[in-house]
Length: 226
Image (cartoon, rainbow, N blue to C red; front, side, top):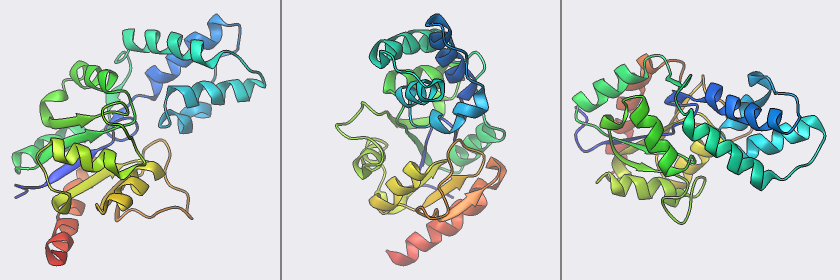
């Protein structure tokens, strides 16, 4: 059983495939300004870095410059109004959340998406009921990769860093977990997996069906260390 354990999830690219709606918001802004839309595959790696990074990447691909602050405003307005048109939990995610909560784990979200938008997304997808705490990029004074973002949300969930695990899809998630002294599990299907020379996760899963079988060994390691 997982009582006393906090499992922390990244959101975009880990729990939910948000790339379609984010790309649609980006293309809405680009087309309004006379630029060609970008294909989802071309911008996928930038999704996890946030809306501004997506805009900057698209402008770089177009070989031009523009008012990124205003573009961001337009992006967010469109995205908020269409936050869950095509976004869906990754296969097996909901079933895994149900199994973890049934086993007594407390679940939390640590994301560099804005808190308000994160809560809107989880509510739209009926996922909010599974989480005891959520911290977006604007919840605290710091955000990932600062470890205070992760340790802060663990505290909000009433958990202990010594009994926590981070699940994410990017080098930012893995580096954050390492800095906080928290084991990490990488989902291989996300948007921006760490490069070979980057920080290494403690486990890698290709589907959420494999999550628990990797959680339990990491918890046993934590128990031995403490």
